[in-house]
Length: 214
Image (cartoon, rainbow, N blue to C red):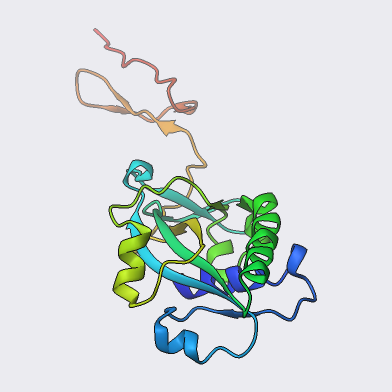
């Protein structure tokens, strides 16, 4: 599922205000060695943190329907995860990097919600939207300075991009056939003889009380 989110981001970062710019989009860790090999303007989206959004965890099961709306399976509800990306621009001049970051903000801000129709097949099959948050308040336990220190590079301007994405839970369970008939009530007399008279079929939740004969 993460690789599908990567592809979604690569598509977004080459659209909007960046359409036709020819900017390369990389997912590699922006280390010193990586930066030294850059010879063209590049946007880097480095996945640095993966955490479950525990507040969105659900219980119970979710029905799975076929084309006619019939429930055919049941599965556990999806688990939601926050994928945090460090987005940076790499050019020869700081002003050009700032322009690229501005273009990123202009491109991503209108795309805060991605509906299922704009997602890859596996994500789209869940029927849920994916949300994006760009340049929000830093809430992770690790600061950006610590991240750059771990990468062995120098701190530079960056955007914190958080993608909230559902992950499917397995397994799925077959659902029983739908109820198409009402409840059947059979009445016996005190001598044990079963009354099979017609008209003893009733709708659910409307059950006739048993009779006693003297």
